[in-house]
Length: 398
Image 1 (cartoon, one colour):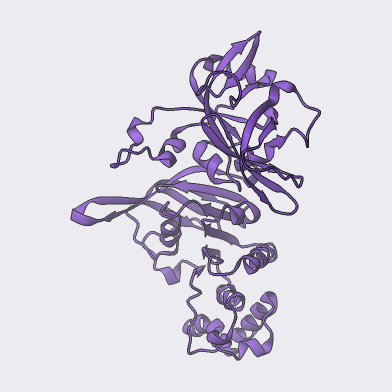
Image 2 (cartoon, rainbow, N blue to C red):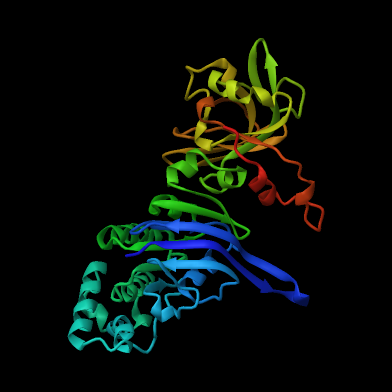
C-alpha cells in the first residue's frame, strides 16, 4: 500500500519528419494510499502512456513520479513494487494456470511453500478451482483468463496495482461481472489501485476518484458524482454520462423582470427553446445577459410533458421526434428543436411516431451553463472546428 504522486509528468515522441508529438502534457496527480483512482478519456488522451510511465515501461520526458515517498524515475520496473494487469492478459500459453501465477515468485527465488500458499490464496480470492490451476490458458474462457491475469498480480502483494483497460476484450455481460469483482477485490485487499479505461461507466462505478484526460492533459479530478453533477467544462460534461449531456447554444435575455435562456437561432415561436431560469441561477448569470452561452441538459432531466404534467409552463418547449428507442425500463427520444438535435431519457414506456410534435419539460434546477469561447483557434487543417478542443475550453459557469 502506498501513495503515488505525479508531478509535471510529460511524454514527448518524435513523429514523421522529426515533428514532436506530446502524449502526456504536464500531468499532476496525487493518488492517496488505498485509493482506487480511474484514469478515463477517449483514445489517444494519454491515459495508458501515463500508466506505463508509472510502471516504468515508458521513459519520462519530464517530471517526477513518487511511489511510497520514493522517486522512481530511474528505478527499474521490477524494483518499483508494482503489479500490472494488461489488456491482452499477457499469459504464458505453454504454462499451466498454476505456473502462470507462480512464475513471478519463482523468478524472485521465493520458497516453494510460500509460492504454494500465495497461489492458493489468490485462487481462492478469485474463485479459481483446483482443476483450473492445472489447465493451460487456451482452454479457459475470457473471464477465466482475466482472473488469472489479476491473480498473477495479487500473488506479488505489490504496493500498487495498475490496470490497463483489463475488461475491454470481454463481452458486455462478463464485463459487468468482472467490474464488480475488481471492486470487491479492492475492498478486500485495500491496496492502491490505478485503473485505465475509455469506458465512462466503468469509471463512474469503480473509482473512488476519477481523472478525466484529453490530449494528454488532466481536465478534472474528483469523485464520480462530483464529476457528473459539477463538470469542469463542456468536454467533461459531454464525456461523462450515457447518453451524453445535450448542449444548446444561445443567449440569456431579460423579459418581464425574469431571465430566460433563448436558443437564439430562430425567431420566437414553434421549435424555439425559451426557458425561464430559476431565481438562484438568474442571480449568478445576470452579467452574461446578451453574451453567447451554452445550456447543458442531461437526457434524464428532459421529460415528456405527459409524464410530468404538473410543472412550470415556463420550463416547457416543443420539439419534433426523429427516432424512439424503447429500452424496456426507459425510453430514449431523439428530438429536434430549432437548430439542435438532442436526446431525452424517459423513465416511462413512451411511443412517439417520427415527425410527431411533443412538449418537453426541463428540470431547470439541474441544468448547467457554460461560457462560449471563440472557436477559430480550434480549427482543424480541413477547416472544421475540433469540437472536443473547443468544449475543453468552455468552462462551467454554474
